[in-house]
Image 1 (tube, rainbow, N blue to C red):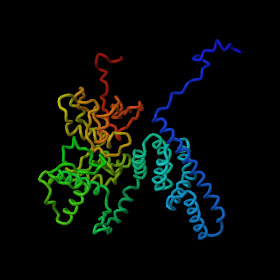
Image 2 (tube, rainbow, N blue to C red):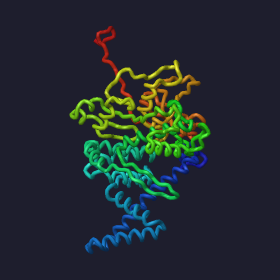
Image 3 (cartoon, helix red, strand yellow):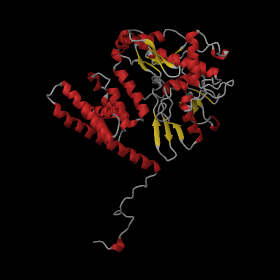
Image 4 (cartoon, one colour):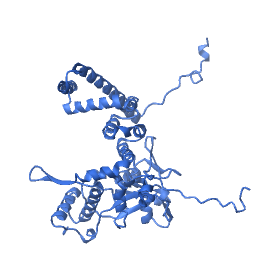
Length: 452
């Protein structure tokens, strides 16, 4: 036995000290524990359901329905929640323990949150059973890597891509359901609802918003667009000819003017020429013929996702209001103008937004078309106006990046990935939605430096 006087407290036999957790560590530790407990709760809820249902086996469908109602009431009363909440917990517990055990395992290990699990079940349950196998494992990996908002958007895109083969048929069937209706509200108000093609509704909302911003004096050059008031969270239109209406109020007034009178007489001249704008990305070969289209990725509309090829071909038929981005190798892309000018030229601005598709803030889902173009290295600090120094940021994330201790950098050679280093030293990487193709020319071995 070694002499106590010879023991070195900092030597090889010393206990390795763990770093002291900071305030963020303490929060995330609690969040992880909540995920673990949520998984255990789902396991116990489903065990309760199966135990009580066993008493109704063989006693007829009517008895089974009554027992299920009784179980829901029992759970609601015991947990002191509504029966709706209890019913949803029962549904989620059955799905996670039965159909998606891999998701339950990830939740139980604290790798995803309960909200991730809810989004997973809600969206994957809508996928035909025969196609779920193509999505589940990839969806779990996505959930473990992304915040809830980004995960939801990515999972929807993943599902739509898997179902793209039947998209045209399903779209034609859904078109038969288009309609307009009015829901009466209180105090002489109501809601006008339109159920129609999402591409058209997306364009309508964009045009109405642009006109409303012009009326309230908030229409700006799109390189400085603040990402709409939703990015600030207050929904207020500030300034603009003394107009005190909110942007939502002006949007509603514009819609009524257009539909009742066919015009917006109150619209300033600057807003009279505003038209709908939708960004559609289509593989060029898919525009040629149906056979080539079968081997291509589906056409995608920014903020919506995959659309039927027939709709994409119509959008790419020459209308000036559609911005077309072909995924076939194109030449002449503007990648940089160096230090010659601060404002990115239109082709570069379009490419930056097309590549990212969304605000490049962690977990943000603001469409890139409503974001500002940010210099990662500021112009005043010698930053260039170039693709590898630009990314779209909504106003909130732009303000955080420029006015706090967050360090935001575009990772060299990443194709547009943005690294966010928090004031506490944590690292978050946001990947762009798309990659810009890199074109190389074959090496000419007839020159003097040929290897043979």
